[in-house]
Length: 354
Ligand code: 8NA
Ligand code: MG
Ligand code: MG
Ligand code: MG
Image 1: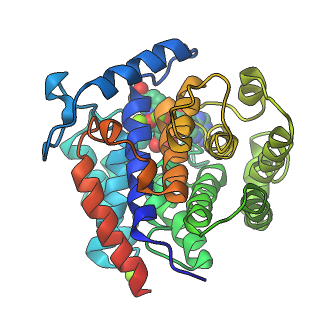
Image 2: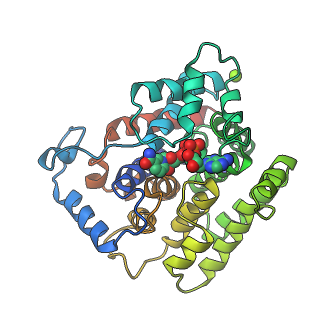
């Protein structure tokens, strides 16, 4: 199989950053008016890019800050680069130290308890604080999935992608509905990196992997304990397949079936659907926007957990389309975009060594 080029690695990290920074402006709104979103984007595009500057924003003021999604994604990447492989102790330490340094990035309500325990010198099992969350049930939030893209950017082998996506998520999310969402997001990025995969093949492969991932005892019992049907992620992927066969799908149906919330089950499938749907033009989104831009715009227009859904879809779309579709004016509006480009190059080099 041909090795993916550097452009896909840069596209992936840039797409993720864009999704977080742009999405964060609208996070938590139950309704996002498309007209308001489009006029906000026009404002970004009007600010002329600055040569060599970290932010194009000086004409316009500050650059758009990234949130917990990117802060944690960066810790994942920095740990992988420092250790040249997945190392749970190093990664946990980076999550906790990053939180300590900048606690106001908009972290989930409960996950901060994990960081506090990880910072204690008494902690000698880095997976234990996550297991204690929610009276021992573990978190099913989307925090494991939102930050996982670095894993498929380092490990070319799909079994490694599954194994390390799960372990990286389990540092904060011990419920299988949390870490299975991270596995799904990692698999989506892995497949998006491959050359020329059709929409149908992409989805078929995700379904067959997830049917296997979700068939283990813990996945079955966690889903039942929360009142879900068996194989809940696989089932939503099949719903996506149905949606893609229709000529149009109303927003209300997407929100009802897939969701826009902070649970991994109500956001990772939505990100995947957004990516696949936006391969085609959308009558509501101006045609001058490319498919990657359309993906991010569509995610944000769904409201709810906009930064996290857009960062996940942005990572997938960026890996698929490459950096050619990352608009400079958007990218340069985001905090720390140049560092993102450097990290992408280092990840690419590590991937190529394997
Ligand atoms: P988390 O582990 O704290 O989970 C997020 C939330 O999900 C929790 O606070 C609970 O409300 C709920 N939850 C998760 N598991 C359970 C459970 N077993 N039982 C009952 N409720 C549960 O943190 P996370 O890292 O998963 O969260 C990621 C999200 O938080 C992202 O959207 C991210 O952007 C951030 N976020 C922050 C804000 C904010 O305003 N600070 C708003 C939305 C999201
Ligand atoms: Mg966030
Ligand atoms: Mg090791
Ligand atoms: Mg969020």
